[in-house]
Image (cartoon, rainbow, N blue to C red):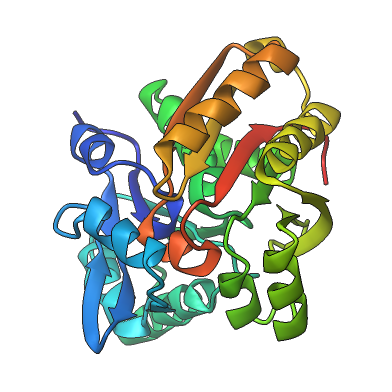
Length: 291
């Protein structure tokens, strides 16, 4: 099927490989380093999700790399001389330099070609299925044959309305990322403290509080979702889980008991994001009041 614009996404959106294949979305991958080896986070086309999550659960500490300028140029050059526009909805600039690398690659290509290139890069200010929620709505608008300008208007209005509420089960990864001190991580693990985290208006993760115990942490992020959600009966809420699907389903049950939403979908949190949250992380994504 021919659309008015092509769509590019990165692997931090945590959408499925099957959806990409079905809808013709172009993809670009983050890279993960683990035990001296490099892996592509390619929407689980080749990276074994269960194996990766097992490594995380057993104490692995992978690192990730932003998408470099050369990788963007490889894709952007396909649009240098054509008339087909490309929209790239990018992982939050508050968490990665990838967005700035994409802008640099586009500027380099336009200088190289001597003219403007029909590529639009949008900062999602989101991660994981928060980014995915935005992209799924863009797909819906594209199926409706909306013009790119209409889609960009929708993005400008709705990106600030995406809410992401996260809780983690392993404080080690927050400590490694500099979000909490080593002492706080050690003491928190001893007394089973679970922090709650959100994405702020600048697309950065911030700590919003802490509770004792896993069950209380699930209740808390449901409560925070209920406090910020709008038009709940027409919403499709997304839940992301890092390896622990059972906890994802438990969170869904709590949410459905407390919020009357249209649907709740439980999906995998991808390897790149999970590398920073650790095994057992859970997150709820919805549209709500502007942040």
